[in-house]
Image (cartoon, rainbow, N blue to C red):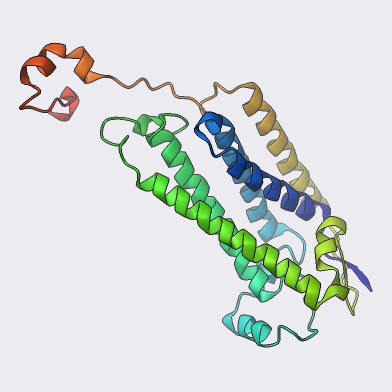
Length: 255
């Protein structure tokens, strides 16, 4: 029997999130860094929506509905070939989804730090000075999290495909397009007015942010008003006469 499990906001989030992640990887290039940053910020908006949706959204989309206990995971793995059905996420999928959200958030945060420290752009552009600009740890964290995210995405896709093979009657893969799963007992969900308003509000915020960012690429999220001072150029006499033995520091650090 058909059961309406994934509501429209959940499905829209899923495809916007998947598309944005793909675009983030495709724009991971020095020449496309501005677009990469815009996409990163937009993904953060999507994560914000998913956080509130996981608390106030409909059943099966809420985090409280995720079977995250170790006991549930062991039971699922030991009976993976059985026909026990899950209307929402199964235990393994729940762990992967939570991990994806956490790793994506860490990827964005480390990306903002890297963007500010090494590129001198964005909200943290003030960190792009002689004391921080050679710091590469956040770039390394960003790359590590990106790689980990790919692994989690592969695990997610693998889980969906395995469910397709082991339990084709459930129609799990189709459900992310239609919202419907085929279950033994009908378990429909329905949105209330608050949930509809929440989904619509975040969609508007997401669209407005993209329009604003692509049409105003000089905004503070993408460029820098900070102009680094070249102390060596300002003190050419010191450099030519004394720099072989002494290091030049900005005077404010010597007070």
